Amino acid sequence: MLVPGPERRCRLRVLDMTGLQDDDADRGPEGMSLWSGTVALAKACIEVSKHQSECLKRGSKRRKGPSGTSAAPQPLGVEVCADLFVNGTSFGVLRDALQTGAPAAGPLRLKCRDFHAEELSVAGTVSLLESLEPAGVRRVDLRFNNLGLAGLCAVLPHLARFTHLLSLKLPYSNVDVDLRAPLESLELAFCYLLPGDLAFLSQSLHAPALRKLDLSGHDFSESLFQPLRCLLEETSASLLHLDLMECRLTDARLEALLPALCRCSRLCCLGLFGNPLSTPGLKTLLRQTVVLPDLRRLEALLPALCRCSRLCCLGLFGNPLSTPGLKTLLRQTVVLPDLRLVVYPYPVDCYSPEPSGIRPGSIRDPPGIRPGSFSGV
Image (cartoon, rainbow, N blue to C red; front, side, top):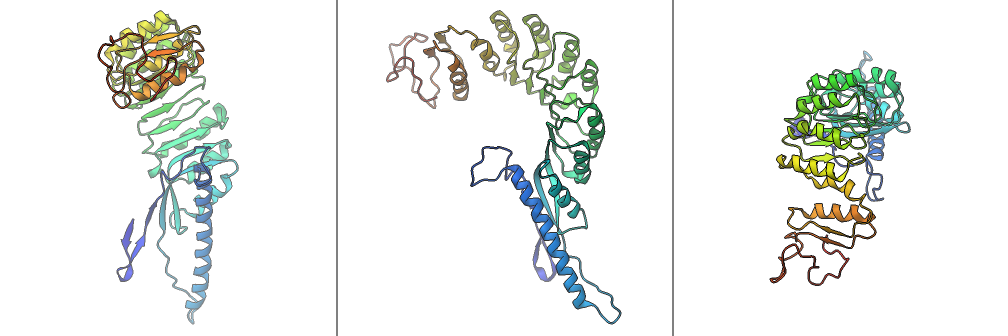
């Protein structure tokens, strides 16, 4: 953002660098990962601050009058908005950059939108959270920090400063914090939640606003089951994405959970991979969730389908599967060694309609495709 300066010249006041990098480790040499981008940006802030200090000192000496005082004007700073990714290696340089760029302290002031911290100590995590300007923080992701319960109790209260926080990710951690703004995304996979934790979440301001919820890795076969049902009832108006992978959900437990699931009228993605569900159990799931118009049911079916190790023919003609859905089907069923033919509808972006004379649903390959091969997906 440019604003008018003296003599009608424009000065840069805001530089938005959010979304320029991601945290994909497979970026090529022509790109820059979020971690390396954070390091480069932090070093730049420190160097620019040092350069400004030197210039101000030289200018101050030239402007000193007989009284020995100086009236050096303070240059306007630039607010740099960015997504930050820090670990133990880059902690020092980012801490120095945030302190150097504190309001009224440096020419470049870092303002974080999405904050990712990996393998940091409790003291390091708290130090960086305190250094961030609270108004701009939208997401916080604390990965693999091994904080423990005591560490989490020390870290999480500092999140209450971030009044615009929408997403909190704390894998392998317990959660007990009072945030002022409701969250839209909450990922609590494999973090040993207690019944009281789910009950607290159900009664919090976050439950009615949640759009994505990941509770994978918890044992919902025993004491956590009833709190889970209550939580789903509270999130039913907003929930779009639910992950319950490897949660020991049996056919009986899933059937008991279905009334609460079916009240989640906007649900479009349900992850059930790794649960001991039988084919009859999945049939019950698919039959009862027909009331959910946006639910992509294939994702729930595939884990059980891939356990049919002798399956050699699968008929899916007449189902409204998209090209991405078919890609997922073919990619995941590659583990079935005997599966040679999948009868599926022809997506309009891949095939023309069937030639006349072929009965819909008959097990025949489209013209030009040999048995056992897949084309266009």
